[in-house]
Structures are given as structure tokens and as C-alpha cells.
Length: 207
Image 1 (cartoon, rainbow, N blue to C red):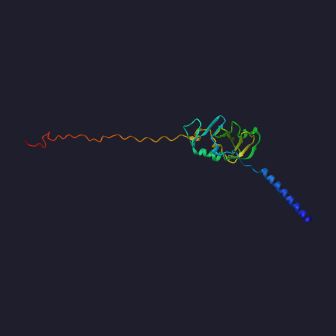
Image 2: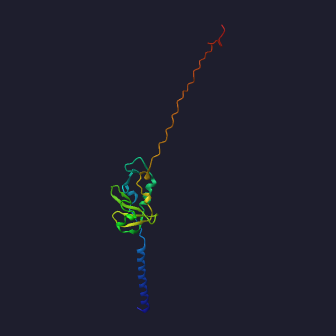
Image 3: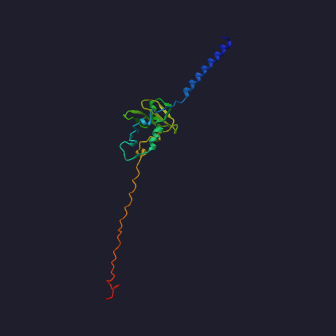
């Protein structure tokens, strides 16, 4: 191998090493992005939303949804659409804490956080997580997966879409239309007019 070839090989080797060092540094600083849930709405039979002692459950009923134990409210379709298109697609990004003692600081402990649990048609748990308000970025939320210590920042703020009030999910059905007023029956008969002609002598023939 000539001297020039050795120099070229050495330079190439240095370039390759620098490239891998650069890539490694970028990976360390690159924000990871993964779905919080690996579920599609068609798999979900019911889901629960809980914050501290407040709790609400929604489940399928034929082709629509209903609040468990409350059949007086009609479920608003846009709320279910939000669960499918916003909650189930939410992504976790950078890790903000790995310390369980800081869960409360990030509003993801059992009392301050809002927990949502999805169940399948055999009542198996499909996924569950606790969301909390972010103090540093109101456009995002914090999230902790059940069974994990890590707290992540999410790519969107979904806290306002997770409520335990029945009237958030449903609304009272409209009142039934008023019944048409019954028309009063009117007698078609005309008053009888007696013809007294001849009684008073009018038009009577002379004798």
C-alpha cells in the first residue's frame, strides 16, 4: 500500500469515527416520540375516567355509547371522537422525571392526576395512564404509564378532554314536540227555521 493510500485510509477512518460520534450525540439529545396507547377505538368496549374520588365510566350500547348507571343523558358524539382522535393518538416525548417522589410535582400521582383506563370486550385492560397539567408548558401535559416510574411530556394538552362530570360527556335529550291542538268540533247543522207562513194569515187564500 502506498503512502498516499495509507493517508487516505486514515482520513476515511477518522471521518467514519467522527460521524458515529456525531450520530450518538444526536440520539442522546433527540426527543423520543411514542404513542402513549397502542389501541384503536374499535377494540374498546368501555373506558373509565377518574380523578381522586371522582369517577365516571362510559361503555358501548349497540352503535352508540352511554354513561354507566345514567341513561338520562345522550352522549355527545364529539366527546367520543376526541377520545379516538386525541386521547388514543397522544404521544409521549421527553422524560421529565424518573423519580416517583416527584410524581406529585408533575401532577401525575393518584390524587392530583387524571387516570383513564381502557377495557376490551372481555373486560381486559387494554391500556391505562395518568395525565397531569404541565407547569412549564400549558400546551402540553405530563403523563405516567401505570407500572412505570417515568413521567413524560406529551405532544398535546389533553387534560380538558378528560372530565368526570356526566354533563361533559352527555346532554339532556330535547323535549318531545308538542302534540297538535285538537280542533273543537263544530256542529254543521243550521238552526231550524220554522215557516209560519199561513199561521199569521199571510199568503192565505181567501175563502
